[in-house]
Length: 247
Image (cartoon, rainbow, N blue to C red; front, side):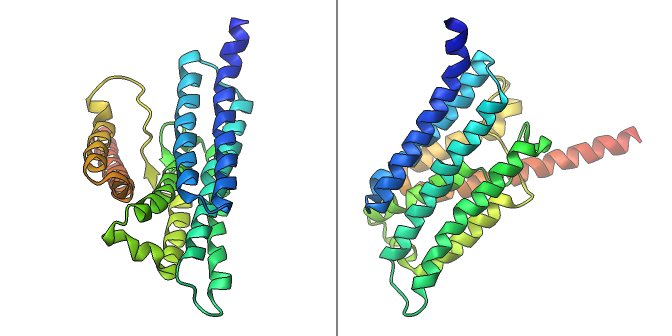
């Protein structure tokens, strides 16, 4: 009984991620974008804990990996696309253009699928990511309705502009599949030096969210991308110097 629980608990948490994403899609199509955004955050929590449970219980399987990608496709691919589509519908409509332009939102699940498929077969992503992880992309989109709900004057106008939303879609889709290393948030040990980038990200995120609430999310994602680029640039330089010394 104990072994069966150990084997199936991570998959059960993954299924909770999928269930939350399905409910979020229904809410988004009903126009309840705030609740749909919270569904993405809930899915992200489940997504974090299914991986944590797998590592703690040492319960890894091919089925678990595929199930995780399928759940992520719904929660972090389709759901954010529906939210973006609804935002485009609520934005100023452009005669003879918006009826086609609004569907640009559904490039998000297309590129999310490509991102997840690459992750499953790319051995380079065992320790870190190549391209922006789908949960980070989904959380960024989930913040948009919450920012609009708080009537942040700096973000309201851009997030109600169909051209800005369309450009954001293209940029986010590009970030999902771009060949750029991004750091993983998994703490494999307590060594401060090995995890300094992760601690900096958590500290910076906590401070921004404390002061700016949901409006801080875009800045946090941007900081995450910047920090990843800096980290891997120094890592590459260090490896190059080591190689030159050895030669």
